[in-house]
Length: 281
Image (cartoon, rainbow, N blue to C red; front, side, top):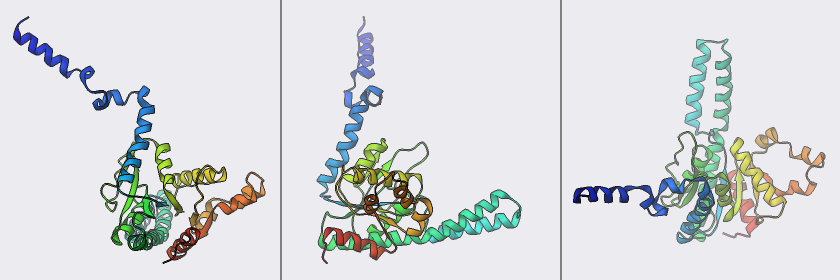
């Protein structure tokens, strides 16, 4: 073989995927057989980086992506009213108006979550560096409100984002360096609870319910630390879940109703957490 042929052969050898270092080979790392390692890395990376950042404990805020600021609710209402005026008999337009009305009504939860996060962050900035850091899923809606409240208080907040089939980007209020992206829902849910000192569930949908019931099940079975589990707005939660009925049907114990409690204001929510942990200001 000529020198040029040998050089070409060497180039082919070094460019082939077999020559890549295993951990730098994305095709290899995505193989089904490597799933156990990917799960382990998703567990370890945030844990190690949070240790390095001095994050000792967190307060988790869950809630719906569709809970919007008031101005967004007002925009949706204007669009819905215009659609009704154009076609008063349209079922789609009527549904659009109903949903816009509910979105505008729930905008108060965005502002109240924002205020709650501001209260918590103002405290931990002054008294507990690295403690009671606001943690969210990093998306829009209630998650944005919580990260925003912490940002406006001049403190840190962190987020656990998830890869989805549709576009999913973190909100802009998260502290840079404290936003983590996950592929596996299970590992993400584990990280929500590892450092948690409280869980506050604002109104939300399937994702919020999933995270709530995962936490309730772990507390019911004694598989995680005792923390306050707070359902924000009894009106909302009573409307979608009849917990008392579960106890009356004897599928949960009466004592399991004590695993959570309701609150109605940011101040009351923060007070419940402070009382649970014996926090004095």
